Amino acid sequence: MASTTSTKDNLKGEKQSLIERHQSDVTALTSSGSLTDTEVDYSDESSCSSAGSAPKSTESSSWLVQRIKYTISLILLTLCVAVILAGIAATQTPVAQTASRLVALAAMWLLILWLGVLEGGQGSLVGLKPIDKDSYKDSHPIAHKCTLLAHEGDNLNRFIVGRQFLVVLVVFCLNLCCTPTEEEEPSDKSRIPFFPKVIDQVFLESGLAVMIITVILGQLSAEVNATNCMLDFINTPVVHVSTWICLLIEESGLLHSVYLVQWFFALTAKDDSPSSSSNDDQDA
Image (cartoon, rainbow, N blue to C red):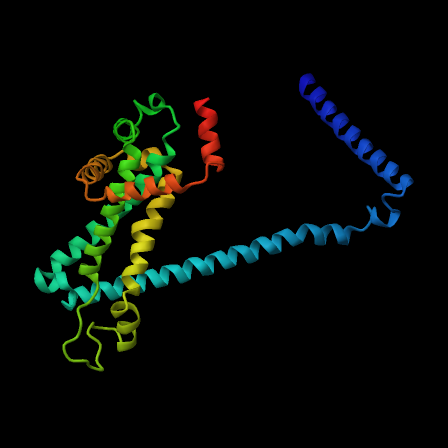
């Protein structure tokens, strides 16, 4: 009890000393003319309460705006998914017509998931490059294998080149699963059930629906999650296999013309550029 009482007395003493120091600072500023007496009004409780309530009102309005944004985005995404599913169910996409509606539906979701793996995997592998690999060797063994493979030599640049080809290929196949074919005879009726013609034209025929689900579900969601959980995101065999596929695509030589562009750009770059000067300093 005695120790508790002494601690409370010490806290009160420190608080009182801070108050006295603040008052002395205000007195010094007032005497020097830097601060007038009208600017220091401790008795005006209404001004203090209004100043304290301003951040609360701003916070509540910001909360409301964020909820409105979330609602609009969720409604738009739901509408796009529903329109695409209705188009597949009506057998209006190339894959649904050539194979079957089940194949088109399964391929659509698998391609979206794989696109997320490619997008988030790149951010994670690039972000983990300066991190000591032994620090997560036991906790995330598959992620450790992925980084060892991607960070060996110039494999990271090769992975980026091959990954870009895969991303374009996945988006192309996704369009085949979701984008409708051209109408043989134009009609005023919608080709998808439960939706009017205007929804069909704006979202499905224009490709807007597939673009929105590709960006939100296949790219941004994965990138945001990978930014916060890099190790957990790539700690899966799918990322490890995708890394090997990207490296094999680059090794095939289909995209090696990009290195000619890189060589030409390096050749035409100025010698006094910051990058070249920094490289010279490292060589020295």
